[in-house]
Amino acid sequence: MVPTAPSTRATLAAAVTQLGLRPLNNVVPMNAPGVWFARKLVATFMAVGGPVLRGTAVTQVRSGAVRGEWVRAPGVSFGRRAIYYIHGSGYVICSARTHRGLAAQLSRKTGLPVFLTDYRLAPEHRFPAAADDVEAGYRWLLDRGYAADDLVIAGDSAGGHLALDLLIENEQRRVPQPAAVVLFSPLFDLTLQLAAEQELRQRDPLISAKAASRMPRAYTRGLPDDTPRLRLTVPQGMPLPPMLVQVGGTEMLSADARALCEMVRAAGGSCELEVWPGQVHVFQALPTLVPEADQALTRAADFLRGALAARTVPEKVS
Image 1: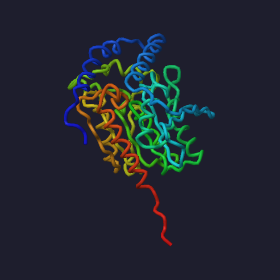
Image 2: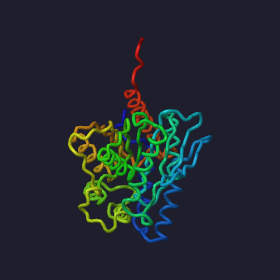
Image 3: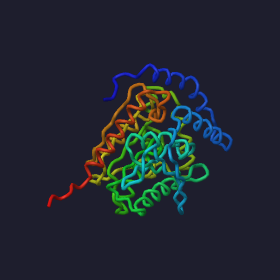
Image 4: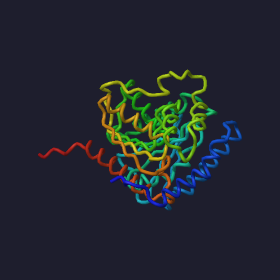
């Protein structure tokens, strides 16, 4: 059950974030030194808030255009099922390494190996580099013998946008869809207009919408604002796997989460939305700071396991 109020630690974490990180995030420039600093800052924050579980197995993957790593919590082995994880970044600042701790927690709770894609980042690589890499990673898993019914997708922030883009591309290219999708604080509108409107109602503890919009712009520079893939559209009646969306109650991307779920439902899909009171952006990655992170990941893991179980074909009784 989603809590009705945040824990004391979560409230404290949001306050400290607003006092310490927000002013810094708002002024870091998107030039080469600024991008380097932002990447180091977020990597440090993620390592402190969500360290990798001791005994986690990490296997690097370099296969043609596919880059990433397999992450397996202690005791988890390879089988016929897996999670495909698409990390967030604003398209600029994160990597497979920053999200290794979150992937390990998800692996532990599901008992599944996690393939964590390491897509190319802006400003070095612009649109559609990240989307192409995410699509290549999914096809690589299919080519390695994983059935789509045995794969589930999880992602956060910009990874949410990339995950939905992948589902739309799968439909257009007649590629089978995964069994389920879980999204943490998904970015839906790359122009951040929805986020800016939400910020008029509630101040995000991490960063302002204006400052955050510089990161997707580094990825989409040169594209008109009405480019369809900047704000995705799911065609009516498009077959979609069941989705679970979790978002923090304090963050500006709560507007994106709502809009994404509304669009999926309007198209005929199933999308559960959980708004966690008092939580910051992708709080699931911060179990040492926020106790609700563990609860939210447990709910996400249960959702993914349930979806995979529903896809299991029962054996015929002779």
